[in-house]
Image (cartoon, rainbow, N blue to C red; front, side, top):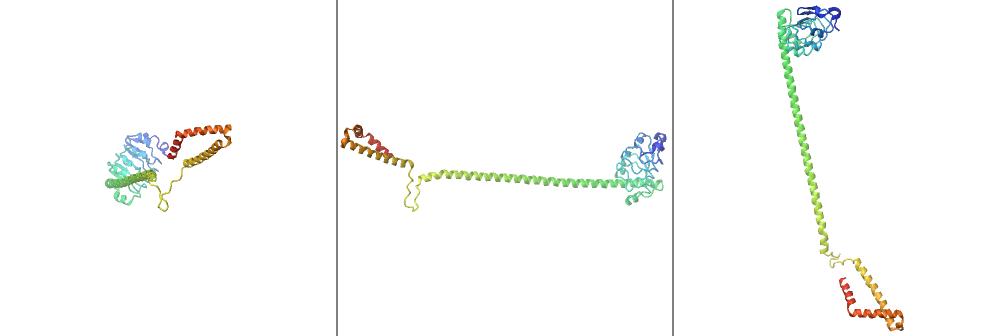
Length: 307
């Protein structure tokens, strides 16, 4: 936590013109809100404190022109440190920095930089060089800015390359997906055509079978079936009404025989005077008269001819 309330008192009391000295204040955190309320404090000294990190909102202090962060415990700077575009003088002596954020390249107004006594990356350490006098510190600022601009350009190119690779991969995926969808559509189309063809064949087969069934009874009626020996056609089986008519004629014949026997008995024997025989003789006489008119005889002959 900030120790300003214990050791620094009110920040305005420490403001001397445009300079604000918070060095040796035993600070663990930067009082960003209080600093933001002092836009006149363009020169800020935070050296010789216990700062291990800087909050991201620290980069909103864009009014800063000179910043001293030497002799702290900073392991890295915020990724958007480049927002401090008005910064001209930056002292990072004796911290624990290994690299600088890529946004450092945006500090276009930086004229003075000290990175001594930091465990810098060998490449960055070689670029920074020493900062033993004003000239070397200005050269350090210039060289580091150029180096970070190159790093930023390399990262931008790498980012663009990755984007291009991703776009190409996406195009390939889309092309593959389109090819797959086209193949699936073609497969469905072919399956549909095959199903139509199968149904058409089934319909044609059913139609042909129905026609054959319709023609078959006509052939059977027009052509009598031959016998097994092939010499004579078999007689068609007797129909039911023919057999019934034969039985009926047989019964009629028996009835006629009985009637004839009765008639003979009534006309020849001595039973002529009996009442029953009298009726029989009357019926016989009427029948004989009818036969003479050929009515019954014509009916019997006509019935026989129809059968």
